Image 1 (cartoon, rainbow, N blue to C red):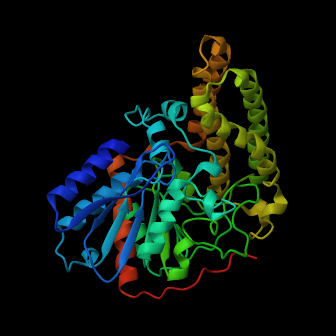
Image 2 (tube, rainbow, N blue to C red):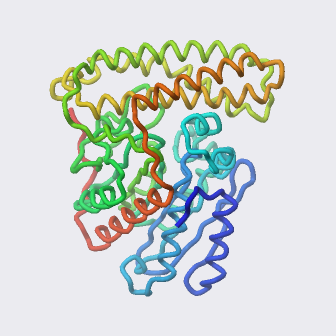
Image 3 (cartoon, rainbow, N blue to C red):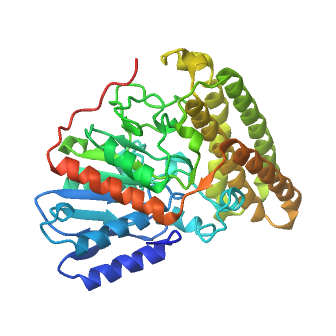
Length: 434
């Protein structure tokens, strides 16, 4: 089991070694390339009447999925051909965004602290994330997206996993079709490994939950997430193979646990807490906009992707903060005034990590500007130190060892496969709350 996150190069090498060691059970092929020319490597293990697709590295700053994919592959090649998880062809895409993943390699060796992580992490802006089908036409798809949807159309998986690694919070699973029974193995694995299950994650805040940590995605015609959030489940590669009857499971494993994310007790002042978070987020956005404008003429071309993400935050922040007013939560019992501690913390985490991600990527942008930007760099450095300290005080983060993150995703994936392969009833997406 890995004690740290592997790099893209290490993942590719391990996949190649596995295919070479088990030529009758595993095979490797390139299904496309990234915008930067990196190969998109697919490792297929086993054969059978059904196909399973595992997509690792859909978000550049979430490296756990690649290690989980290799953990699954190593288990599968060692299993008997008629063993449960071996009774299908498993197609494991080692990393969907290798360009972005390489930009994150500067923090993989630690130390695993908020300060180090946010100063060195990279997450592309929404329109440069290959998991989303946001292009206006087929010809405008990112090459990584094109490779993935072509693969989905080729193998028509009955089950697809998208492996994610939320930075702070807890674990949860999102489903395009319900998978009755998945909540039990999810809860067992989480309890065994000391990983909290999120009661109401930001990504699925308005979605129905058939069991703790499990969320049914809405159909395309219904409300998805917060209107200001640049994402939509139906406009994604999660839903692309839906026409084939595919069940897609997005499995989230946290880097740092925030145990209050499980607390269903009433919050003493949810409206006051959210007003405070919104106000601080607005002030931080103004400060970051000022710092970005001061260095914008000096930014080298090679760090332009960092600045594009910073600018995206500036555009979305006002509408996102405005949407956190009491009227947005009228559909919940008691509205905002009835929120529990887990709900308030989920929204707080969403706001504060967005600020820290933006500040960290701006910090890296400023570093690349050289001596002329030292004053801005120092101000950002102090800002990050202060905001990380406040965030840690609020969340009480607890690092989850990489091997436990991997083991959790591995167990959930195997359990989901067993349920789906056994013919558990598969229904259409449930309606969201009115």
